Image (tube, rainbow, N blue to C red; front, top):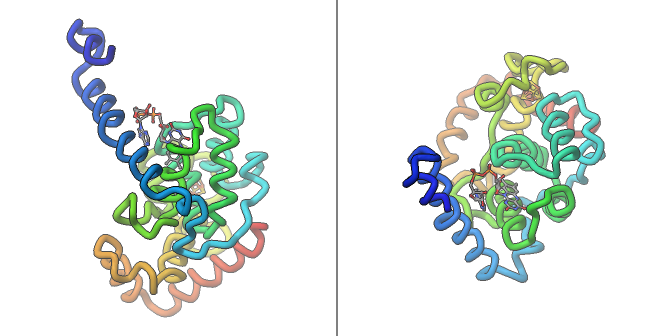
Amino acid sequence: MAEQAYRTGKAPLNAVEGFIRQILGWREYVRGIYWTEMPSYESINFLNARRNLPDFYWTGNTELNCLAQCISETKKNAYAHHIQRLMILGNFALIAGLDPVQVNEWFLIVYADAYEWVELPNVSGMSLFADGGSLASKPYAAGGNYIKKMSNYCKNCSYSVAEKSGESACPFNYLYWDFLERNREKLKSNHRVSMMYKTYDRMPSQKKAAIADDSARFLDALT
Ligand SMILES: Cc1cc2nc3c(=O)[nH]c(=O)nc-3n(C[C@H](O)[C@H](O)[C@H](O)COP(=O)(O)OP(=O)(O)OC[C@H]3O[C@@H](n4cnc5c(N)ncnc54)[C@H](O)[C@@H]3O)c2cc1C
Ligand code: SF4
C-alpha cells in the first residue's frame, strides 16, 4: 500500500522509502534479535543498573518538562514517537541507571503497540544497552543539548539547558557524564564512546567534582 501510494503520487518518495526500510529492515532485525536471544534476553543487565523506576513515569509529575510532556502524551494516547521513546524516556532511564526489568514493564504496559518481541529489544537493547551491544553498537546517551535541538521542550522547563552544573542546571547535562564515568570499565573500549572519555578526562577536576555532586544529589532525591 505504501508503494502504491508513492506510485499514484499520494505520498513522497522520501517518506515511503523510510517507512518501507524501517519495516523490511529494522523491524525484521529487531524480531531476529528477540527470537535468537530469548529467553535470557529478558533478564540481561550488562550495566548492572539497579535504580527503581521513579513514580513520575506513571504520573508525569516531574519538573523535567521533556519527561513530563512525553509521559502525559503517552498516558493520553498510549503512543509516543520513536525519538520520544528513545532519546527522552529511554535516555533518562539509561543515564539514571534505572533497572531494565522495571523499565521494560513500564514500556509494555503504557504503549498500544507494545508486544514483547518488539518492545524488549528496543528497550533493553537499543535504549538501555542492557545487552552489552548485541543490538546497538553504542549506548544512546545524550545530554540536554540534543533534546533542545530536537524539540521545543526546553523553552518551558524549570531547568536551564544552558547550565551545566548547579541546582537549576538541566539534569541530562550532568547525568550524561556521570553515566559515562559510572560505566567506564564496561564502555571505555567501545570505539564509538571512547572519544567522549577523552573529553571527560580533559575536564578540570572542579568540573568533574560538580558532575559527581550534582548527579548524586539528583539521583538520591529521585526515588
Ligand atoms: C524504548 C523503545 C521502545 C519501543 N517499543 C516499541 C513497541 O513496544 N512496539 C513497537 O511496535 N515499536 C516500538 N518501538 C519502535 C518505535 O519507536 C515505534 O515503532 C515507533 O514509535 C513507531 O512510530 P513512528 O512514527 O516513530 O514510526 P516511523 O519512524 O515512521 O517508522 C515506521 C515504522 O517502522 C517500524 N519501526 C521504526 N523504528 C522501529 C524500531 N526501532 N523497532 C521496530 N520497528 C520500528 C514501525 O513499524 C513504524 O511504524 C520502540 C522504540 C524504543 C526506542
Ligand atoms: S532543560 Fe533539560 S530537563 Fe528541561 S526540557 Fe530541556 S532537556 Fe528536558
